[in-house]
Every structure is written in C-alpha cells, then in structure tokens.
Image 1 (cartoon, rainbow, N blue to C red):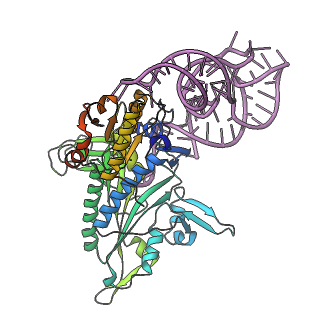
Image 2 (image 1 turned 120 degrees about the vertical axis):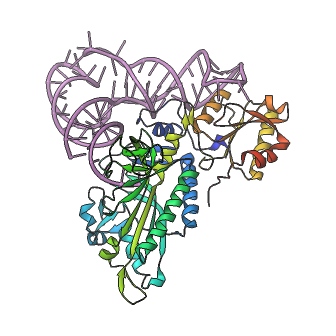
Image 3 (image 1 turned 60 degrees about the vertical axis):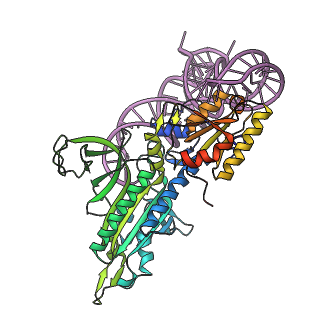
Length: 427
RNA sequence: CGGGGUAUGGUGUAAUGGCAGCACGAAUCCUUUGGGAGGAUUUAGUCCCAGUUCAAGUCUGGGUACCCCGACCA
C-alpha cells in the first residue's frame, strides 16, 4: 500500500480525549475515529489489526470444532420475554420499534437466538455436541463507556456457544475452549490470567474470566504471583494479602485488570426456557447442556496497545500488525525512488504486503516519527546512504539498532531471520 | 442512573463584560531532505435557545454533546 494514497492522517500531538494510553495512541495514529461516546469507526489501519485478531480467533476456535455462523442483531421482543431478560437486562438492552410498533432488541448477546436456532436442528443425542460461533456487532446500552475501545456501546465480539448431551461432555469442551483462549491471547502477545468470576445475568454457576493485569482495567482480581491463580474480587473467598488457596505459598495481591474474555457453563438455563430438548439413548427427553464463550475484539485490540507501547508509539506484535513491513523512502533522488519501487514490488513477490512511504513532501524526521507512532514490526529504509552500498536498512520496531542488508539478499534475509507473518487482508 | 468537570478555526489552546489572538494542520511558492526542518503569502472559529447589558466567548437560566468517578459488562 502506497502511503501517498493511504487513508490515514496521524496527529502530531496527543488528542485531549480520554486518558488511556491505548485510546490516545489509537486516535493519534488514526486507527479509529469517534462518532459518539462509546461508538467508533475503524479506519484502514485499525481494521487491518482487527481483521488479524479475527483471523487468529477463527483459526483457534475452528481447531476445537467451532463452526462460524452470523446471527441477526435485530431480535424480536418475544424471544427475550421467554428468558425474562427483556426486563432483567434493561438498561444493557437497546430496544427499538419497527414502523408497526413491533419491538426489537439490538442484540447484546445471542443466547436467545442461537438456542432457538439450534432447536430447529437437534432432536437426538446423535446430533450432539455442536459448537457454533460468530464474529458480530453487539449493542449494549451501558451506563458508561470508557477508554475508547475498552468499553464501547457498539463493539464486535466473538461469541461461541456449545451444546452438549451432559455435563461431562460440556466439561471436556470447556477445557478445550480454555486452551483455545490461551492460544488466542498468546498469539496476540498477551499473557492472560484465568480468573474465577461470577456469571452475572448469564448463569448462577461460577465462571472463568481471562484477565490482563493493567492499571487501566476496571476489574479487581486477587492474584498469586507464585502460581498465577486468580479470582475476581466479587467472588473471592480469600482476602487481599492472604495465602494462595492453590499453591499455598504465594501471597495474594489485589490488582487492576482488564477482562478480555469470559466463559460460562450455562447448563440448562436457556435450553429449558426456550425448549431445546433431545432424546437420549434410553429415549428420555432431556434439556441440552450449554456453554458460552465471549471475547471482545475491540477491547482485545485496545489492551494489546495498552501493553505494547513506548514513548514513541505503538509496538505491534507481529501477528497483529496492520502491515508486517513499513518501507520508507528517504530523499527525492531518482535512484532512491527507483530502488525503493523495486524493493516494494520484490517484497510483494515474497508475499509481504508492506506499507510503502513513497511521499515526496515529507521529511525524514516526519516519516520516522510517524512510522514509530503506528508501530509496524519491521522498518525498511531506502536512502542515498543505503543504495550506495546496494543495501537497505532494516530495523525491528522494538530494537534500537538497525542493520544493513544487501538488496539481492533480501528474500533470504526474510526467509531465515524475521519470519514476519503475511498479514494481507482476507477476501 | 447519582456525583464532578468541560465546550472557541480541521487539531490544541489564549482573551478584567469592551477590535476573537497564538501554535499546529491545510493551500501556494522558495529553500531544505537520516528524527515531526525554515521563510513568505493565504485559509478557517466562540455548541444550541433564551435572558441581563450601551456592549456577552466571558454573566444568568434552559438544552445538547463530550470527559472523569461510582454500580454494570467483553
């Protein structure tokens, strides 16, 4: 992508909005744009990072057997009355009316819809288990929004729902889902802590949250430094400063954290209210046992930025970077331009889509400052200085030192050393 | 929903009740080209509705939007 035509206007100084670092950097780097409080547009840079997270999630969820669907946001009032959540969930529920005054909810979550959907297909234990997921926009009429993407009113969530014949089978899948979540957060460059929590309006059973320690977080957890056991303060049966109940060695500390994901054993709560039953081997009718598993993708994106930044800007983990390479041309000379163009097309041939700063009216300092701000993992510079030696300069974003690499050696260099992932957009 | 705060060009900020100014950005030209460079010229603004006043960005009332803190959530 040529930067001369790229839809991205960065700001030289921090915007006044908000005080979360991730919020400031995402606005300043022109990854997102605010339309209203808690409502954001994703611009090309931000959308590319978002898509990269989606890609990781799709891969990991499909590995454990999830199949992707796409459910509607517009959901008739009746199905919400069935589970009593039409009233229980207000205010989080956004309600709208059609022209005939028929009422709808804008989906804040999809237990009602998916349970009804699965009911159409499940009759026998032979039809189970099933795991369906979607990556879709959620609407939540929350009292308050904060930190840009940290908590928005409209946001994109991955929600997975699993359906089982019995609790044992749910338990098996539940553990697989924990593994998938750990893989997803690892690939995003985050070390997530699994923490015990309350099920809120979803279930009475205890649930697991995936938390990232951060001062920005709104959640409070008790955390054991020794074994990483953790519990949300709202359900903790132990005290701050007490001994860890798991390893019995570590001291528990109260820490702020960001809730990235939440997984629930729903049991038969929704299958019973919506009427999702199946016949077991003996011919007895039983409610389907359910689990649900959510990740807020915008919040995950913001958290990655919150954790991975320095005084100059964002430092994207390789798999999430909007572009794997930022190619920068410095100087107006025809020779420099020619070499930069060649490098740009070579990179494409090697399978790397780079962001190519081909702008003629920007100074070197401005280009470098902007490159650091938007934070691609690998910077390649072509200038008079480098072409004299038939080289380009390569610098990883998280290192200070750059190295010169011969242009005819570039492909080997990438194959052997950097292994930057191709982050082209999916069709 | 309760509490606190803010609202001035595209962005960030000034202006005792008395000519709305500065910086950045943008535009044109020249110089510059390895860390947001310099000069010249230009561009664009007081959230909305009332009120007080000779005079309102400034004071009063109402509205709206946004930010922050609490309860809720991914």
